[in-house]
Length: 282
Image 1 (tube, rainbow, N blue to C red):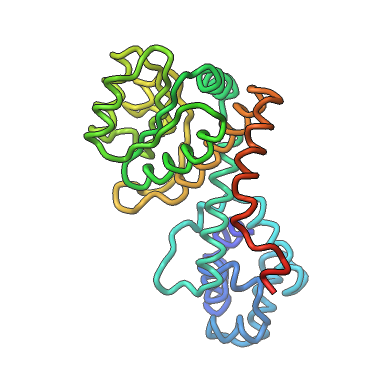
Image 2: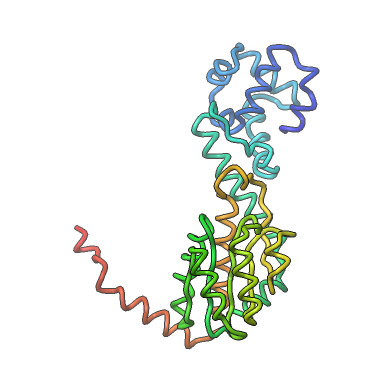
C-alpha cells in the first residue's frame, strides 16, 4: 500500500497529495485516527480523505486502513526507521517496536546453525568462560555471565580494557572467550582477542559480518542490523546480541543434561526466602 501511494503521487490532486503525505509520514497514526482527525491533520476536507482512499484502489476508509495495516505488518519497517522530532508518540512507539522485531526476524532467517552448534560445543566443553565487551556490549557481557555462572562453569565478565588484556593472557587451550561488539572494530577488544588466541584459547564473537573481530574469531555469530553505530548508541544490535546469548544459554543447558537441572534448582532455592509471598505483599 505504501509503495502504491508513492507510485501514484504525481497523479493525485493537490488535496489528495496532502493526505498521501500524511499517510507516508505517519502511517500508524492514520490507522488509529477517525476520518475527521485525518482530515484535520492533513489540512483537507473529510470527503477528500474518502476520495483519496478510492483513488488508491480502496472502497473507503475502513478498507484503506485494513490494507495499510496489512502492508505495515508484512512489509519492511526499515522504510520508516528514522524517528523524527515531529513524530507523535504513537509513531515513535511503532517504529521502535517494528524496527526491533524486523531485526530479530532478519537475524533469525540469517542464522548459521553450524556456527551456533560449534559455539555450543566449545562452551559446553570449556573449563572456563570469559565474556568481554566495552560500553554497551559490556552490559551484554555481564548479562551472559549472570546466566552462565549458574551452570557450575567458572565464568567472569570484564568491561575494563586493562583487565581484559591481563585476563586474556592467562587463558589456556581449554578456555573460551566470548567477545561482544556491535562494530567488531574496537582496537582494545581486538588486542585482547589476539592475546587470548595466542594463549591457545578459543574465541566466540558476537558481532557484524566481515568485521575484524569476525575474521579473528574461532566461531562468529553474526548480527547484521541497520543502525548507525558510529553516531548513536547501539539499540537494535543490543537486543539481537541478548537473544543470541539466550540461544547459547538454552543450548548449553540442554547439552549438559539432567544434572544441570538440579544445579539450577539449587540456585533458585537459595533465593526462595529472599522474596515476599503474596500474603506478605498484602
